[in-house]
Image (cartoon, rainbow, N blue to C red; front, top):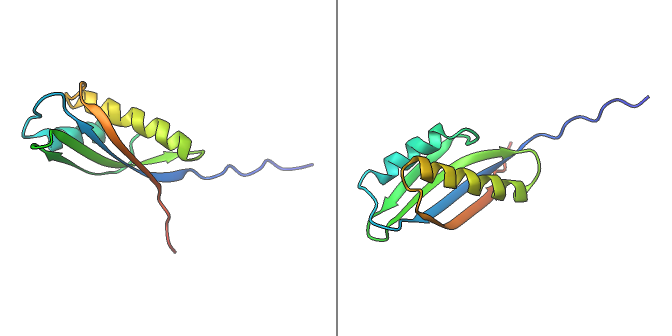
Length: 107
């Protein structure tokens, strides 16, 4: 009789994204995005958020755990980024960059 195969551990990915505002973003855009990311279910630790007023962009970075691979991280990461943008009040911002990298722990 064979035992159940052990579940594979989740993979942790760094998700970094940039969105372009349809109009000028408020001065506190980075703070609003960081707070929205921290409150968005499914995001792991938030590494931060930045705002470039001249370029009308806002960027965020967070960790995401997924059971499968990078395709799931891309799908879930972009969905969570868009959700956080909407919750921060930037629902009309266009996601223009999405960076996904497997987080590798060194012993």
